[in-house]
Image (tube, rainbow, N blue to C red; front, side, top):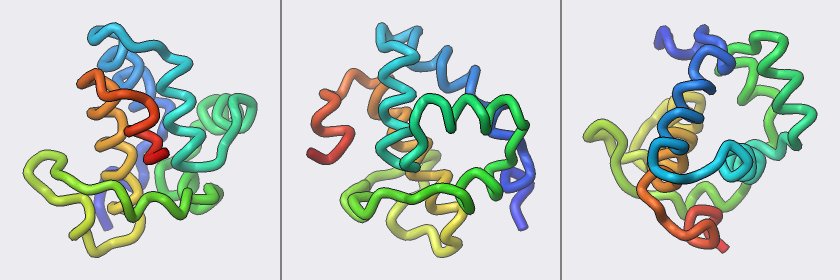
Length: 113
């Protein structure tokens, strides 16, 4: 089991916010991306952050968007679509979406509309 599975989402979330804000994107856009991936609205996301939910618990409670199969590419040299472990794949999907947001990609493309 990877160590990231037991890390709280709340401990990583500020890094996601900093990453996207440095590139001129907003926390609201980040939350929109997370909502698309997980099905969590702003209240549910805030509850998970406040509770210190681990990535394992976070994705166990999520309704992962069926459009995730359209997410392709690499994060840290690993092709997200080739990650075998379902939990790790979901974490990599989240990382990839945050990267795309920070790179200035159009929201419609990030959300695979």
